[in-house]
Length: 324
Ligand code: ATP
Image (tube, rainbow, N blue to C red; front, side, top):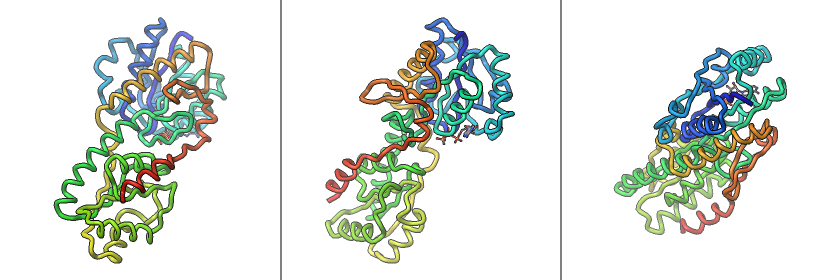
């Protein structure tokens, strides 16, 4: 391998820049070339490439978002689109790539690797922490810290007015963010897709909370939770059945994906970038680098995209105990 392409794809997450920096510098260290591919698979199809050297990634380890931009690209789902991408890579002399992204981006990389016998390596970048084969994805730790800080602020206003807040956090299919920030910010209830609390239990819990003399209540709700239709319906339901509460809703949205990466995410990104490049140089392909027990591990992409992460049930119990 003489030239490695690197790109970010799908939803962005804090730490992607630190991973790009790491891939570029690991290539320079091992005396191979590195090319940045802009806007993920879209840029691959359009030939939007830029040679990267060690200095081209100065001062980005601390930046949120991705300097290479990200995109969703329907054309890459077609055989013609992938052939165009392959031709462009060959023309540029790129003989392997590192993709930083989520499940969808890995599916594309896996199909591409199989189709053209092309070496690829994945780095999991998503705040949701929903990728099998790694205990932590890039951006997750930063998102937890961002959300906990915001909930602390909402708590200030909630307790000044004796209010109940439903706070919706990201997590379409998984409740990792909700569960962890819920415990971290001392939420009274945490609603996650993996566990159906039920509306009756929610009401009981809120009644108990009020009776125990709490001056405010925070309920953290994962986007994908199904206890109510959505946070606004939950508000209506509680107002109807428990009029003792003054209820407000806060949907945190995209701010959760932004901001400077935490130290943990910067270190993780740095380790993953070096591991991904060195694995390619050793002849590995079609794998995703992950972290487990603080060691770098590799999982076949085919397994990573099929597997599911599991919620920490011990944390659910801890939350139940501490909200007494
Ligand atoms: P996020 O965590 O934001 O969902 P993701 O990587 O899963 O990140 P997707 O939008 O699902 O984001 O996928 C990113 C891109 O990967 C798609 O726009 C498409 O170009 C490519 N991709 C996804 N699925 C496939 C597929 N089945 N075949 C080929 N390419 C795919």
